[in-house]
Image (cartoon, rainbow, N blue to C red):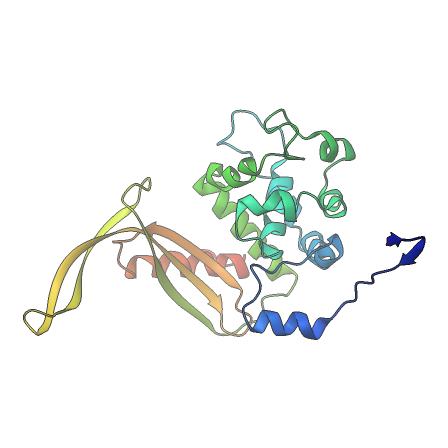
Length: 256
């Protein structure tokens, strides 16, 4: 509202979905994210229905010396970050932590939202510093990660979300640098065009990283088992482990 020579002028902002869609198609948006706790309300209902929180309650947080925030709250907050399409942790304080309704839906109290959980980043980031959220996944042990995954899949199966009759097994390499802790190393042959010799030559090089194997339903796309190893491990080493774990998750009565 602008006051000029005792006259009032109102400027109205209107929603133009067509213009928004045009700019998205043209790539004129820096980033796109959903907003509001209502966007994720059905997601939270699903988590409660499949017993997700009861699975998380079994996680003890062995990688923590002291726990100031419930792990279930940290994982739920991180899940909200992913579902909102927030790509970088530096965007979390603006796009997630300012949504009071969403934070309350996750389980943070009004005092925590206003004053923060601890003194780290005091006055700048509530309810927590973004690095606390980023470090969370790194502190989970291998057993805790597998426990969460298998527990959720078993609950999904009990609730009849997994109805597939056909499944597919596949592995994927996850390349890193050699600085990653416990990463593997694999020698590969790479073909490259030599402009001097005018022919294709083969170059030997080393790649570092890990490999993940997974079995998932063809129709639903729901993974029923997963395994993680170093990048040089042959795919055959995943087959038996994945099949046994997958059958255990969707058919608990099977024994070996």
